[in-house]
Image 1: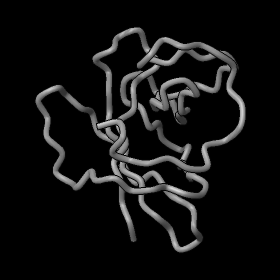
Image 2: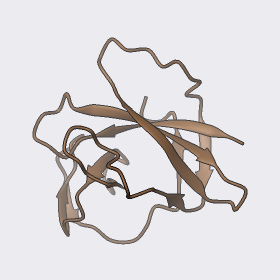
Image 3: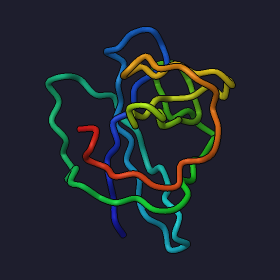
Image 4: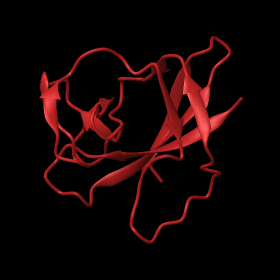
Length: 117
C-alpha cells in the first residue's frame, strides 16, 4: 500500500491553522484518509512525504471530523492554487492559501502529494 501526506489549511480565518492528512491506497483503487494531525511551522514529518501520484476517489470516514480546529468533516482542493482546505459543506468557499473564492463543483480525482509541502 502506498501512503502520502497532504497539508490542509483550516477554513477558519487563522492562517496558522494547518494540519497534515495521511492518505493510504486501498485494494479497491480508492484512497482513504487514515488520520490527521496538527502542524506547526517547526514540526518535521515523521513519515515520507515524497511525491506520490494519487489517482481515484478519496474515502473519508465522516463519523469524526478531519479538522480538529473547526470540526469540518471533509475538504476541497482549490481550483486556482491546488491548495487543500477543510470544508464544512457550504456551497461558496474561500481558499485559505490564495484567498480565491468560488462555488464547489466536481470531485477530486487526482493530485500529487508533496507539491504542497
